[in-house]
Picture 1: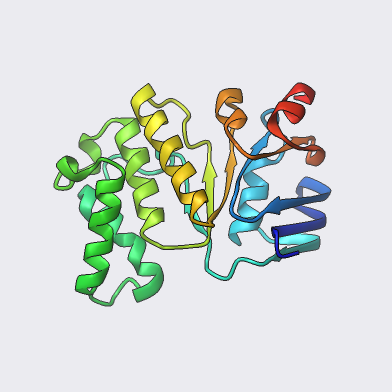
Picture 2: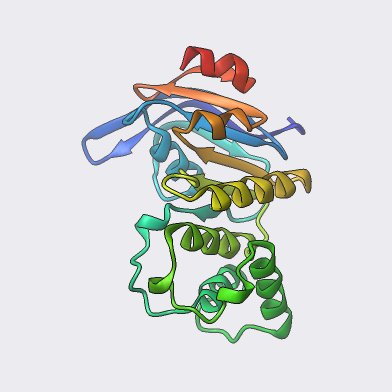
Amino acid sequence: MQHTAIRIDRLTAGYAENTVLHELSATVPRGRITAIVGPNGSGKSTLLGVLAGTVAARSGTVERTTTRRPAIVVQHTAIPSTLPITVRDAVAMGRWAHRGPWRRLTRADRALAQRCLERMDLTELATRRLDSLSGGQRQRTLLAQALAQESDLLLLDEPATGLDTASQARISEVLDEVAATGVTIVAATHDRVEAGRAAHCLLLRDGRAVAAGLPEDVLVSA
């Protein structure tokens, strides 16, 4: 169990009357990148929602050996581009998980947010508003915000979709660096190249896990 971050057993979940996941069982290794792949409607985002705690399980169990609140990186298109905040403020919001939204951030909080800005090559964009950024720049901002939470479980929904090559490369590089520190990363993706970079792969079809293991083996099934 010490090498397993998440153990899922016969998980069933969905929305209202729509059941999406059907008795899904899988494990996620600790401190590695796991890619969740599968066609549209296979349950990738729903599974991320269950792991994040935003979608309730109807039956089955999800056991996590990670100890901190998961950090979630949604697609940049899910965030209103007209949100009237700067990149620096958006990244600093990642510290709210520790301070709460109404408490003043400490000097240490702001220093950590600054390091996350630097890590994602956002320093020169720190005073820019989100509505002035490209999709890749917004996605890097959302990842920097998640890194500021200092979680040991990072969840990403299609992190490279629609991004320029430079942003895709920087995100992949940082995710490798973060996983090397022991953080468990789970990313839903339909990009075979991105999935191929992962250490572990889980293939979903019709809400069920149909294959798991090394990407070079699983992606053949996909």
